[in-house]
Length: 402
Image 1 (tube, rainbow, N blue to C red):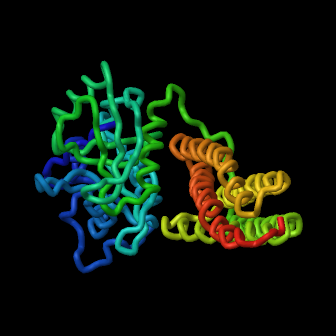
Image 2 (image 1 turned 120 degrees about the vertical axis):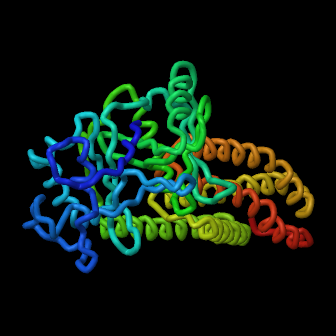
Image 3 (image 1 turned 180 degrees about the vertical axis):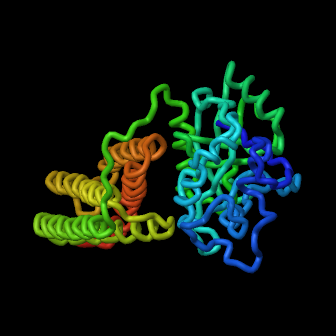
């Protein structure tokens, strides 16, 4: 983590004095209000007073509580390469003090229908290391909306961070990884053992997860290196989802056909329960706004098997009771009662596993865990509410097809 160097008001005299670096590079006294501030000009020169660097920058790091601006600047994506070129010129590098550096934001974002990056001016000296952070996790902000990232500190790390934050209240603290700035939140108070980074009401789950990953990566004892990188295009991803969906339908059709043939009318009742199970599951996923992925489809397929398995246990129990000479009513009641313990036990253990996968896993694993959790919960409901209601109607028959 690095603190952001405070911007000092200086006059842009374009001298060789290093103390005037901000005025020389990002001063706006020479900007032309009648020209397009984001016009792209490859032939721009640093000494050309008609197109100063300020026309490419827009101040964006502002503390509303103290009405203070800090050196964080919005840059159009199309201008980033040009600004990098200017900042790397020898005559510019000589002007930049040795204790500060320019750093870009980790990724671009869309703001006011423009794709932009943020350029920060940071102190080179690292003020705090991520290895001191513990128990990093993100959660929903119940008060302001959006998301927050929580972390804890202990021992030496807690005292260091308390000293750092206490001396820099209302100043931004840049969170960096590999010389890129993930975020630069303002310090609102002295942080000792527990801290929280507020992402803002406009932050998404992806923003919060990226922040969590950056903080955890900074806590790793070894550097992160990209060994291999593969990109799957949208067309290929959609094709995989489509094939997975069709294979699920084929598997479902075969299962429903087999159960219907083997258990006859009772099998058809079980098929109705399975169909209701899938209907309720898809309704819940739609209500949660979940995205259907390949791991999610795998969870749905597993749910089909679990739902069918619950009905098979019940039917086999009913068959055993009928073989002992019991009436249809007694056989159905006894079959459901005797199968309940085994079904409940298997469903609860699966729910525990799904919960552990959701809490400890990430990405695709969580998608699988969500569909599995809700699918198993609904399976228990359909087996003991929907299909049982149908079998209660059949209790008055002298014999049943099973």
